[in-house]
Length: 328
Image (cartoon, rainbow, N blue to C red; front, top):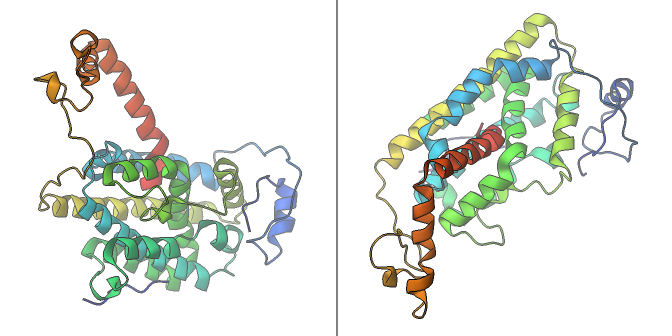
């Protein structure tokens, strides 16, 4: 089936002061930067758009990170076929978003946040899809129903309310920069992907030298947008819709995943569950094994202790909180 969706400098590492940001944003060269001295960041106010978006999407954020797809991904339980479908869904979504951002790049709400060299993901995702499906993927891969609804919303905004594209860009890109490196490693390990980066180009931001400082810059630019209270409220509502569209895609993937057989582990040493005859463990040493014990038996014994389980649960929660923004 032919594709059903239309596809579409280095990051500044120092923040500009509020007055200098206004001066910089009067230029049309939003994607290039010069070296600037680091200046004190202005304190945030509850009425700043970045704060309104953060506080106003907390509930949606929590719901999204507790979807089955996200939780299974974080545990490394991701089927290759499902990961391929998720990659295709991201390709269609970002192709639509970035084409609309390109078309509206002179809009006063979009121009200060237009960073194609630093942020755009469609071309990287195109390489990932080609890696998984082959060079003729355009003849076989199609846009899913839930993804199409997401794409349709983005297209509608691009033509009728382009300022609200900011909510979708903020929701996706800030998440991509928050936990992409962790998820990249999870995908590489779980799917036995090459260490050279094939299949995970989406996670690589080669033109962002410092993700944390870039996110600070992006949020500072958000706060310079001249929007009244009603417009900011609409922006928060649209960001929540972005979370909802993502959750609908996850739910769709979960349904598809239920029909995909469990996949056998690819190559490598056989898996040992820490039970039974330790001589069947791939890490068992013929001499001295009885004295030293199988490492996996030791791990199994340790993780049965309540205090160890509590520590592991806390660590898992910390990791989930750190990378939750990525998936959304």
